[in-house]
Image (tube, rainbow, N blue to C red; front, side):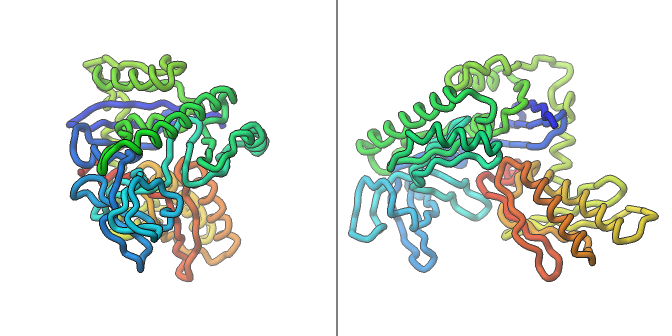
Length: 399
């Protein structure tokens, strides 16, 4: 099935909104603060010279300052391959050590940001990483293309950095991938040279605002246009594309209809309200209830007003299959991550249960962010994990 994609961007109440549409349906909503707040300064992808402030050996973690008073969580298992600028002792990691770290996860609720010494430079088609020197290819690319790319990239294998080829590389010439890899490699070597001359707490690389980075991370296959309301925002996006992706400038369009704003044309405000709601209605009267806790997200499937003349087993399977599809959609729409527990309607037939899990895995596989069905508990609760990188929508809006 061919998917037509479109991106809408607008500024409202000191926030930048981005909506990704697939076949005219909103599937992702991103909301970012505009301005120079602390959270804006400590953007995902920023690279700093940090100092080890504290070590908690029993959990294998350290806390690294990237700015006076701003401590971040650090996994000590990474220390073996870290790029140190100052070493205070012979142990792999010591209090007072200064090293290069990158924000790999933004602060969420009461949790501080997470930093990593596995430095990543992310492009549209490839990622250069110092944490793993292998060459990896996105599993969402066709097998024949994966094998072809791995063979072509073989000569680039080295002991300093690795490469990951992204899903967006599917329909581009290999020369474009190679050109981007060379640019990422130049940035990596420039960082190493610059870091050696900088003092502690220096910000070595300031990542673009999240709403710019989001443009690089969405699936570009079938992307027809990027519609932007607001001249200032349009200029900022255009400057970025002129520098990074000049061949795609034709996709940018400034929206200038004062009588009919984008929010009215595409009904985006209603989409946001629904994405913040606790109850999500399915066809035929069934519904989901989505609730957030400190540790996880809980989704409860209810038959609601569903009426059917079929036998109960068939009806419950039908409701659950619809709920599985909507669950995958809501995880992506709301950017929910971490542990997700789904309480489907109990199925007595094991074959029905396997059919449900197969469908759920298929729907989750369409998500650009890694999502996995972990297990089914004895109480028939389905456990899902989704990689945690950015704040969920409900937190982003209310910050």
